[in-house]
Image 1 (tube, rainbow, N blue to C red):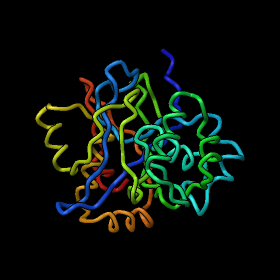
Image 2 (cartoon, one colour):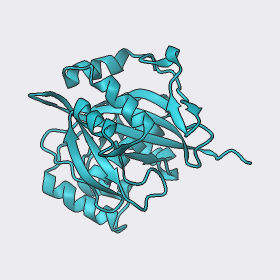
Image 3 (cartoon, rainbow, N blue to C red):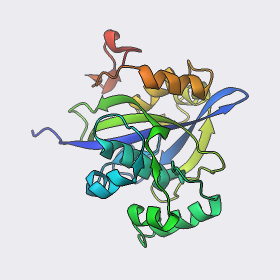
Image 4 (cartoon, one colour):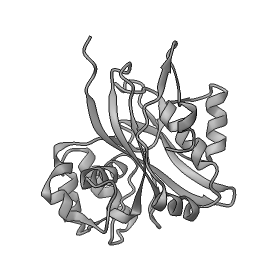
Length: 239
């Protein structure tokens, strides 16, 4: 049997501070989604050919990690598509963002054209590279995914697109992990592991500072009958 091919992907853990600690924004994938139906996930998706283009690179301002800027561009694109937050250098009023996103979701404008319409550049520094996860070969949908962490832009409102994602929620990591443990919601293994790591940070500033200096070890979970997934002990809290 052929091993399913890997697809490049970018995922963004969008965060904000609250009186109770860090909150993250999660979306529920649709019931008919080909990958992870009904699961709560971070905004993200696979890269497309436009993410690799010179035009995309020219829209990014500031340093990016990893070395390939396409992952940073895709991270920002997917976050805008799926939850309406745009990591732009220039501020944009919420209603203008919402209208531009609506046109894009109706395929009236591309993401690149939307940036031109809004007259904005993308802030590469707003999304901090955090980790790299590679899907095991047992899964028919395999990704070489780069995870980023980011602070939600001031004055913007996160909203699910109601096409591919629903039930957008700001939640504390510990709270939603509890829901998953009680089988009240579905989450995939990488989402759970990232939430576990985020729960140790008191503020977004602490998280972003950590992301600046952390080393990134590519991770592929081990698969046990079921299937269930686990990390080898040497990888826990080191990736």
